[in-house]
Length: 572
Image (tube, rainbow, N blue to C red; front, top):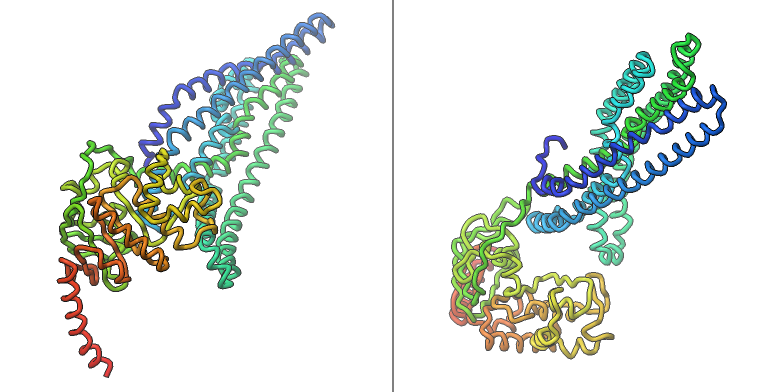
């Protein structure tokens, strides 16, 4: 992940938290100074109390030692609280940006529709509030401890340096041996999670058609690959972790023996021997902690790398100057659209002009590009060339949150979100009861909603089975019509409707005509086309016919009549 450029957003989050990092470093200074309490206490006990046999000295030294430990504990508690708040501040700074980038990437590339980025942000946040980051704050104080050991005896200092170098080598070998394996394991885990999420979205199909065992088998194979790589990485990391622990214990015992040697030679006091042993253990503790938390560090680093890549690929949206509210004039100029993940254009050189208040029907055979055109017109899919203009301005020049309230969209696949009926219709903004009811009545769904258990307060969601397909579609239509948008795109609005629903939709079209809304309707059913003004016929992503409905219908009928003899000859 070292080859991934750090995102400006992440750098900004770090800079925003720099005061917290300075505070954590400031407290680390006093915490590490207070870590000298234990060795100094042992030094005084052995060299003063034992020699003088003064119980009063022992009492005061013990009281001072307990006070110092109490202060140290309080400082460590404050430092941990600071790190928790730094991690929370990082999350608050980045979470909405990450969510937006994740959302945008999902639109650009449907295969990458996953919430993994939020999990990565959680991994980074948890590491920053854990012991791993504390070890980074404590490690720089190693030279101070070694300097004190030099004061006890030069051999103690050189021994500490040798021990630190050996543990550093263990850490380096641990990094080089496990980094690639852990990155691969994390990658396999992300794939397994994405596969499981995809399967859950299609749970009903899997259950009804008995596909669960086979689909689960595919997930299990992916999961097993992750487990194997993680196991290999953990096995190797375990070797170095245990080696580090054993070496640290061995070094503490060896320095005790070295101190005893100099005590025998009268070159050191017994207090220095014991204090030196404790001091070495404290000096090497951060390195030991770093090695033991290396797996968490690697996970956080991999998560940081993925976040950096995402935020670099999807830069933050720049706010454009607010444009006037649209009146509904739509122009498409030489539009070419290549769907995300495809290399073939679905829309090629489309040119149409629609005046405010006109109702346009969009028809054509399957794969003609109808839904692709709709997504491009709404700015969901980026254009390869050409332009989509609303009131003369290209759609990308509008701020999405400012244009959105003036756009109504009913997709083929109706998605309702967890919340009440009124919240869904109001697009999860501030609920205006009058506008919610007006939209519901306009969609012909008001009476149906009143029959629900809690009327407009009835909870619904993506997985709610309380509503039929037709009811969900009509609530989706009410959402599209909320607050009288100027441009409305209806993609197969009658695909799930019964006869009553068809009549309600017909009335809706008439109401929209009186309100002067510009309406685009994609449909295979001809019943709704009698309400429209113009007809756009697409074939192979290009405009075959466009103009007043009756003229286009005549041209289309003549075209089909010409094609029928050719088909008969080809099949004869």
